[in-house]
Image (cartoon, rainbow, N blue to C red; front, side):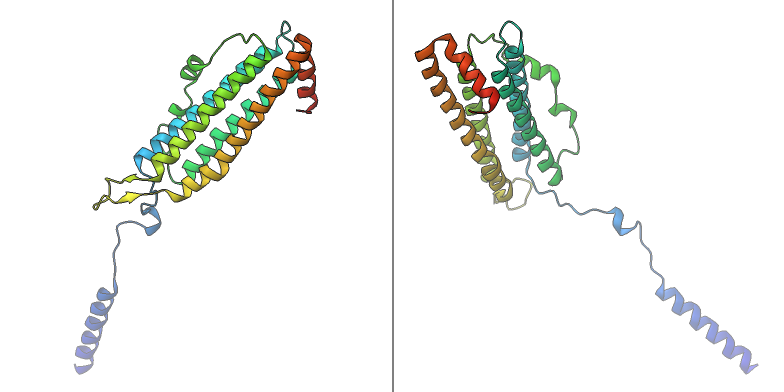
Length: 225
């Protein structure tokens, strides 16, 4: 009898002990992601706008390259330069998209960034009278792109984050540093290069007239300018 009672007590003790050791959870921990995307809406919005600006510039350069590729214009050097510029602007847009993805953004409304109808409506389909007018137009376009990049920096450099309780000033140091080093330097160098080309072509045409544009185009094609 004593053995039965002892066995019963031992069994009860084991059941209670195992019951205390049991745990429960609603879902695996790996299914719950903490918030790590810390970009604020004003900065994200202006970055999305800049992506559209870069794509618009790419389409504009494509139009310019196509213009100088026509048989009635036939300036292969200018066409080559503008097609290369179109590729550069497209790469800029890809870099900005990749950056936002790295920061956890662009999880929705991605297709709105590439609105082909809106892009075509913004293209200047002007028939450029000369290579000189096209270069001046390109310089104006690059200056506008640079201005927009600086605006992105200003928006993301300091503003109030209303999502946070104390609404402190937020400075996206990483993005500002990225745009300053990766984009602005290239923009300024590109503008200086275009300004130099405008000056050189102007002198060519002053000395040689229409032949000056022909000679300039040949140098562009060979990569001498």
